[in-house]
Image 1: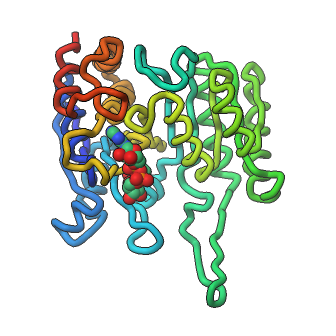
Image 2: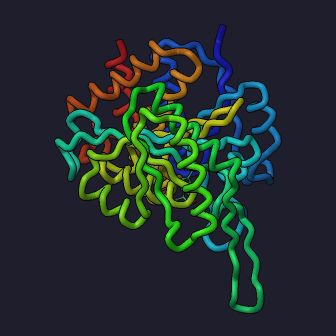
Length: 335
Ligand code: NAI
């Protein structure tokens, strides 16, 4: 029976990388009945709504989404579609594997980078609680709760145990935000106590950024509140070739949405230049999630073959291939 999956192409380069990824998933031998629904500025233009009801209706049927990036206006305008989706579906774990692809030339070539980022996905400064106290004085509320901190910490340690990983590093700024980040750390320590076989450490976020650049190979699992997780994810993407590479998953108890770390890249949208690797690698995670482990392995292997050959890479990683040429190369390597 076909897997029903919600496909949200999104904005900017979203439709280009989403269609490329859908082609690759089908070529991996998986029978998918895609439910294509629009969100973001694309949806606004078509239906007058940024996040139409159809998105939630489809996800209520499928419980699995593959999503292209959606644009969010800066300093004003509508709230982020991503924040709304993650909160509404309670997708509390943002999971991002950061790994070197074979053959890819980066500043850190030869360094064995292999880490996983676990970012809390529902609260912190993304609560959207901002107000002007008096003219020219604004407050933005950082919300940290025991419930959300415990469950992201538990998701991280459970993954470490399941996958035989060795070390979890919690990242914080509890020297300054003693109550909020203090509570996050307290929860991480409590959960760490239940997983004695996994080593647990803590780093203040500024030091963590420096260590990530100086010694990226020493990191295993990173456990972060929402904002630091967002920033550190892009930093980590830079270590392994940039935003065109790193995949992600938003996971809840019932639903999951798979999407790249990158945004809608308006500077290259519509030019056929976008690198679909990050969304394709997100689809690799998605296929494993829906139980298609063999297809997941096949697709990952095909992506790695294309990088090892180095002949059909997109411009962001030093090649000159178009999105379509890269996709065709991946498909031709699926065995
Ligand atoms: P961005 O990630 O869209 O782009 C940053 C730089 O990386 C640009 O130079 C872009 O061309 C390049 N890039 C990103 N993805 C690429 C790919 N797949 N292939 C080749 N080059 C790629 O970040 P930016 O410019 O800060 O944000 C643009 C919009 O995206 C904003 O509206 C932002 O809110 C939104 N955004 C959405 C996300 C999501 O839907 N999950 C995540 C991050 C940002």
